[in-house]
Length: 390
Image (cartoon, rainbow, N blue to C red; front, side, top):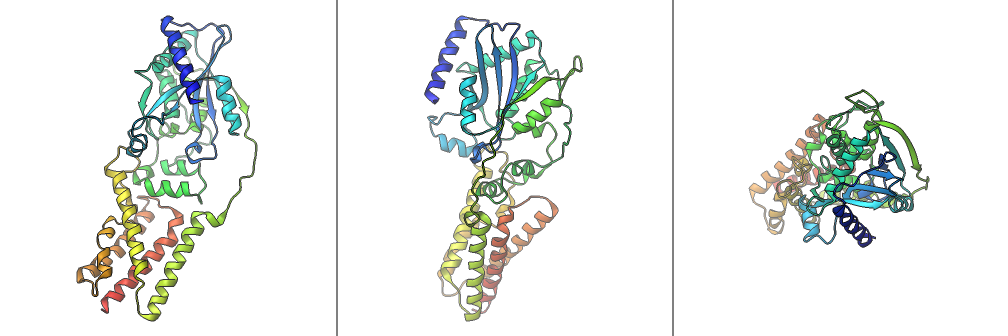
């Protein structure tokens, strides 16, 4: 499918190259397609695209800014670094439509209130973006994605003539809330996002910033007006496909709450057993310091070694303390140094600071982590008592 799409784009670009100024007919329509969420994490937030239908010219095309090439050199490294370029894609409408029907994802269409000249301007802009030298753009989940491109291209094509009004039932929300509203709170995707993304996404988003989500593009376009004549931007809308309600199997026993809760219970039981016998389970402490240390290093890399904006100021470092990886050797000594007891006090203080950050709203942390954080605090407290008696 990707090769066929690439071939279609290549042939289409060749065609428009020979026609320097391809024109739309009076019957042409331009609409915005909003695709509902899918089942995988990368599909959970939906998709947006432009549809240009010209029955007289025999064209029915979809332009979307959500294409990436797995053949890109160092693809996964660039993705992790936030330096992966996305592309504008071109599809026949029927192919586009059928692909999302097969995924059982809802499809809604909004017809734009544009003059022929405005339609022509938008069409030419998209065609120019299709050229090999213009196709790529540096993707940003919050500020430059498949949804924000729809807003930006529409504004550019209409000479900033669109006024985005506040939709009905609009609610102020942080970026994190907007993301988590599209995810199950007891899912590994939700947990991973809460660990990987920092306090910068816990600030309130402006109405326009909320349009990083395709569903919000649909809502804001619905209530948008044209500044020049105060007419509605959208003349009509329709649902092309309604997602079938298929019950999805849920397995609580493989969920983060259950797995992390079970691990945390094990930590507490082992700590209680150590307390009763006045001993220390070395493999447990090495494991905890290794896990928290490596996660801390990962968070630091996301913060300082990538271009991702959403990973900055991540206070998960207060529990996933990167330096833990460097002090593991103390557990293999007959007697730990006094500095290590002070280090353990620091870890307890950091967990208290995390709680304060949470209460004050500086950063929201994953609820599924609560049992683990409690278990960590208890374990650190026990280690303080244990090493004090040595």
